[in-house]
Image (cartoon, rainbow, N blue to C red):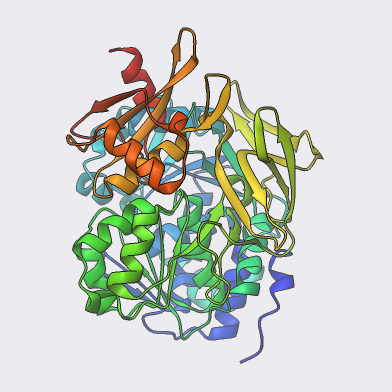
Length: 519
């Protein structure tokens, strides 16, 4: 089999990448992809679905139109996304865990007037009322679309398009938008992130330069495709590399997922610290013995999670770092050079600048650029208006908003979001550090911190926890043991039965802040 030219990836489109994979790995690849429908698909099946869905959706939409996609983790969703983009439509992947308000905001910011979904999915996920409550948009169900695929369409597909796929679609520019994703909105209203074909495929190429995935690998992906980690690493990476893929509908089935990893003999899992914590609680060592790579991203890896995976399963989690704006993978640790406490080295082609921040002695605000950088934002205050990336570092740079440090060996350490620093008694204190101390004391519970105004001190740290036995005294003992100053400890502890979470498993700080203000 010819070696893949990763340099060529960023010069094509998603559809061209699919066609190239079909030619490289063959049409007849049984169980290349599996999903919970249940379904089993080869590359030829994926190409057939992509061509058919692209043709069907093109009749109901206009070139350049931003089309909402409200679909689960199934192969048909990937075919729909690539099919839309092959017809020069822009799929906007809606977060169905965001509720009606979140989806409505996303549609508004990206100018979405039509949403493609599945009636069966809406009913099974109990989303029918939320979807129907969206105003100013038309819902188009795949079940209705499929009935419109007539004899002429079938002749076109089987007699022409499958054999000459690149002639069957209009030429496309890799710099054109491939998808619009939406930021999580943990600290404000979500923004639309416009990612070009070039950005997505460049990120896949960057990953493949350090992780040589291929047909012998089997990846398990339960991260939602509307999330950049689930889209690029969990879906496009196996598509391009020939790795087999097991798609699963949700990361929340903590008991079922370890058993599926065992049954499908998967060797790679992409996940988050929160979900890895829950899988460890419900898995036996035999469930996870096939895993070779476990990569954690989207949030900081909690040290107790790292320890339990090493002690119970003999697996060293590889922590990485990414942002939706960079499609998303920026840095990752490797098996042969895993440095816990860091997120590894930058991927090839990514440049970083760390600009100083007043009051923070070590590190500074991280700015990035590279071939995987977004085309720009759609902001809530200017819907549909593309704002190209720019930061204090210059045009074409992205201000991550994260406080970071690069060591002499090139390893990147993330201290936390700049917005997640509190001014306590004149000092800048990282709120994430206070959470880390809480996790060190009570690893099974959920913890979150906020900064609230306090006369005479500037701000005070409030810790929200689901551990009813957690006290400041226990936190102080842990801080002393970890060598952390007392100033990072919360001024007040609030015990709750649960914390508000986003669909990715991260704490919804925006909602938590609103609840704090209403107390």
